[in-house]
Length: 171
Image (tube, rainbow, N blue to C red; front, top):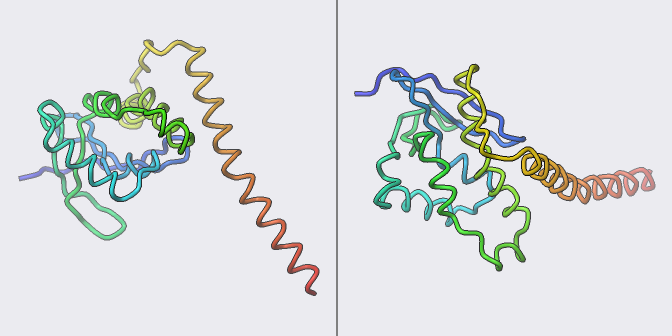
C-alpha cells in the first residue's frame, strides 16, 4: 500500500516534469513527462516505458505510483532519480537523429546532463549539483537550448505578426 507522496510539477527549462518524493525521501520522476519534454512522439514514449520495464538494470529503478494528473489520479511509471542518467544515457543519438531532429537531440543532451540535478533541487534545496559537468559544457548546453528555443519561437512569432497584419489590412 502506498503512503503519501510529495508530488511536484518541476520546471525543467520550460518543460513540466511530474515528480514525487516518497516517505523514505527517494525522488521519482514520471517517465511520460520526461519523454514529452524531450520531444518523443507517443510511439517512442511507449517504447521507452516498455524498455524501462524490461531492461535488466532499469526495471530495478522503475515503479508505478498513483499520482494526480490532469485526468485525475492515474497509475504512472516513475523512475528513481538515480536511474535517470542511466536510462537517458542508453538512448542513443544516431547520425540520422542528429540530421532529422537536431532540436530533439539538443534537448536529450540537456536532459542527460541536467535532469537529475534539477529534480533533486526541487525536493532537496541543499542538494549540490554534480560537479562532473565542466562549466564550459554547461554554458554550451544553456546556449544551445536558448538557440533552439529562439529558432522554434521565431517562426511562430513571424506567423503571428503576418496574421495580425493580414487582419489589420482587412479592416
